[in-house]
Image 1 (cartoon, chains in turn brown, blue):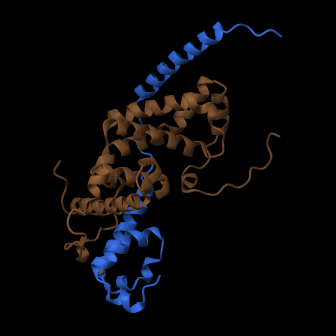
Image 2: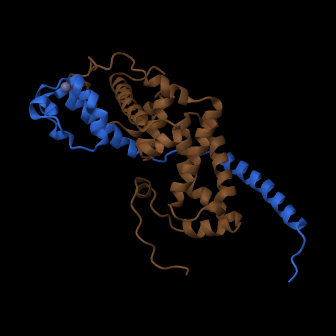
Image 3: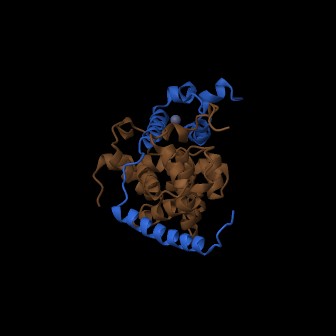
Length: 210
Length: 96
Ligand SMILES: [Zn+2]
């Protein structure tokens, strides 16, 4: 059998964020058959997502470009194995995440600082300076500001924050990817958000010195 | 779940903030938390953290790789591709 109604798939966060793209299915099929033009189309459709992911995880343009290249080369080699049982973009982004993590592991990685950042910096009591209303975020953080704050997160925090809050992965997926516990992933995420709040509030009070 | 009403009332900021990661993860309705009704500090904290998580979802793709990236990919593919063609050319022809 060839077509038939596809059963409705569960709507994962990835899929909500990766709605089907016109012409993608045809391009995938053609690229699987070795059509170079079709592969270029897939690159054009997904380069931005893949590169943004790499850049946010790595915080470095040169590395992000290298790994974008590596991710698409792996895609080229593996595309024949894509079966269509997940969204193509979900599959590709997972591939890209793995490329980045592999690279970070070789470098000896924020994985290390994953542990390090877990150490409670003070006692884990409440922050004394969380308080007055004027310390609340104004609710008008623009994307550039948030982007810059994310760049300034310690690498271990940044990975979990980007994977969970930006990319929409679940904690069990992240734990799997980073080879850490789910509890670890959750606690890293919380600390990342707390740290971001700090960075954003500091940014609101004064322009960054750099 | 098992906390009683009076426990919640006497919960300190430290205790509340310790529970926060778990509260966020359970997608519980935080506005129902007694502590938030009486503590502006923690209420502000919760609003900020929710706001940050919300804004992060809007961060999606705004960066583009330089055109050089595709050039390199194309070169690498051509190299690999010609390798494959050579391999195929070397294969003995299939007889019908
Ligand atoms: Zn409080």
